[in-house]
Image (tube, rainbow, N blue to C red; front, side, top):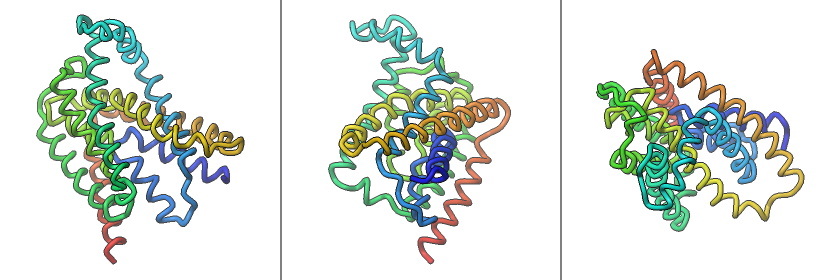
Length: 267
């Protein structure tokens, strides 16, 4: 695959994975609107590995806390913050796995990969994000995450399997709806991405392993590195800006893109 194509995919994935604008929607649109070849599953897995590395590095203290709580969780005890965090991340991931298996088994995942679905999801869930952000007045921080809220956010996260929804966008929306601060909702959305990316990467990776060859692995390594760097930069900027800026700029982008896509789809 040409280097420019690899870099374009990596940057799109890295920048959009954690911003509430839908990385999957943008990656589906790339070949649809430009005529470029679809990047294939090997590159998809690679760029997700890159973004996974970025979020783990950025939130390493929280990741370390959750890992330290795993032994207690395995013994059936939620007697420390790490065990509670690990348990919340686990149960928040279950709905998206179940829904993902259902979509794959029924073929609906491929059926939804079209401009109309992406356009409506981009527009509709963008407006829902705007509503939740403007009406969410509480200031609960990520440290106040409860099992109940993890279940609710996990159910919302499953909706993100509809292309154009945005996994980070819908989980941030759920967090703001539940009363978390902008920074707290975004942090939880990012932490929830870790087990979700691992689960989806494992699922796709098993199917992809037989397709891999030296050139594919080489291309994947390049894509992963640039996805890691662009994701780390995007994540750093967003978390810093959320101290003083709302999600409105992302909503405006989603609405404009959604309207353009629907115009293209129906014209």
